[in-house]
Amino acid sequence: MSTLVPARPASPLRSALALARQAFAWATDGGPLFYTWMTVLTAVALVGVNAWAEQTVHGMGVTGMGDHVSWGLYISNFTFFVGVAAAAVMMVIPAYLYHDHELHDAVIVGELLAIAAITICLLSVTVDLGRPDRFWHLMPVVGRFNWPLSMLTWDVIVLNGYLGLNVTICGYLLWCRWNGVVPRKSFYLPFVFLSIVWAVSIHTVTAFLYCGLGGRPFWNTALLAPRFLASAFVAGPAFIIVALMVLQRLGGYPFGDRPIGFLVRLVRITALINLFMLAAECFTALYAGSTHAASLRYLLFGEHGAHALVPWFWSAVALNVIAAGLFLWPGLLRHRGLLAAACVMTFVGIWIEKGMGLIIPGFIPSTLHEVVEFTPTVTEWKITLGVIAGGLLVYTLLLKIALPILSGWTPGMSVGVPELDSQHRELFTRLNRLVAAIRAGRGSADVAPVLAFLDDYTREHFADEERVMERAGYPALAEHRAQHAGFCAELVRLRERLAAPGADREELAGHLHLHLRDWLVRHIIGADRAYAAHLEKKP
Image (cartoon, rainbow, N blue to C red; front, side, top):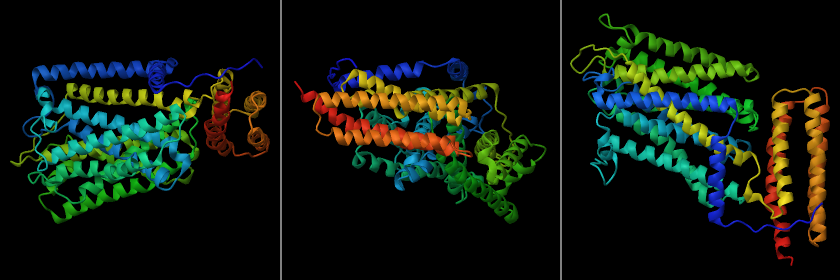
């Protein structure tokens, strides 16, 4: 091994600049699939921007909205994605409140989704403004912010507050990982627990915004806020399940199956609760025959020859019922294609239910008891899809930056010896490749060489590291050597278990991902940093 010279630690400013450069590289680098995905999203977003420019020039008349139905696809989109944003909390609770370590990395996927979903919400409100130049009125102090009397101002506060909480939590945890330091629980846990309460509040306040409008009897129900939360905890987890499965399939980010299993069990319950609340709402309104039932009758069966929303509503019911039935099937987790289909069905079903089945029928019949139907125009669809594409662009870029930090080596783990740093980086790469190979279902003939290489490379790296410590007279060499021996023994046991007949490959992949990778992180940040400090003191 060549002579190794410790490197000087980077200053905070240099570290921040290095992170910014690396984040830009991650966000703009990828294979053909990544570039195709980003090109499609960018094209859809630009079409939406062009349609919004047309709407701004010609007025809201280019949409299907009017004096009778003044909220259409934009506010429907807003309401739905508020729920998607709130759903991130369902992973935060078990991960932090009950210390489920295996869910920690997957929580970042959910919290980044919350950031993207809130972005879609804010864009949906912006495009719904007839005069976007008056957006400043929604800003406290600057505009005419009618707080605390207006529920709209409460909505602005809770949405931006929730966005700030998720940005703070994700940013702090990723910054700590990049710099190779242990996050201070006293700093970030209060924000985590506050986000749990705040997530419930954003959808509750949105529900109060509707049910507090006395002139819209369809929304005047105390069950509206619970319905919002129930549907949110169906659609949000369904999206996260698909996102985790896609990331597993791509292979670079070896998430375990436990987060997916947990979310499936959650949706299995919340999907039934959502359907039960819908049925209870329909029974109460129709059986009592109140004014509340006029909009519901139009939605279910049509009124006076008008039935534009009937196909939408029954499509949503069908999608939700079929998806709920699939989630109840115990073998669903073993059939990933069917699981993805169930998630997509319930996601689309909830989107229809929140828009065409809740927001729009609140205006039909109108306060003058007139049935004026709403049909979205092409311009409205373009803008809506453009907003969603913009949110997906944000989500994709956030994942491209965050996941490499979570799953690989970062400059913050540097021990000050360039050659050993390079070996540490290669260890993470090889370990992630092994997990991906096992999860992809490759046979022993493909997996065994990868595991053998990882074993040989690990022993070579540990030997090099021990020689450096021996030459430097490191006093804790014996303890360090014992830790290395323990890791090598664990690899041997893993190799034997993988070769055994009937081995649970998914469980072994999870063990590799959760225990060995995290062992490497803790070992480098703790034990390796200790000998690096000793090397720094040597003349």
